[in-house]
Image (cartoon, rainbow, N blue to C red):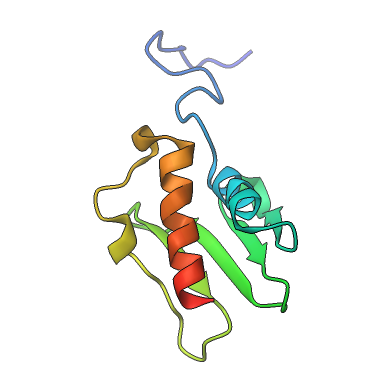
Length: 108
């Protein structure tokens, strides 16, 4: 048993956030179409989306806590934040996913 005292205010594992970043990617492909595919990255901290033509997109959170979409088909990294201004996990999976889908469809 650990000597660490458990703080009664610590959230139980898995309860602090209602969904993971990989959940956003999986929900996005449901909205985009049947030919799209999503995979969870390690620990669910990124989601990888593949278009029918093989183009890949990564949904993640940067070191400052900002949600982004990266399209790897471009020579230069494409990290798009402007779509997510003011968006947070508290807006819910559906609202966040709609923003991610808008980005992907805009750059696909």
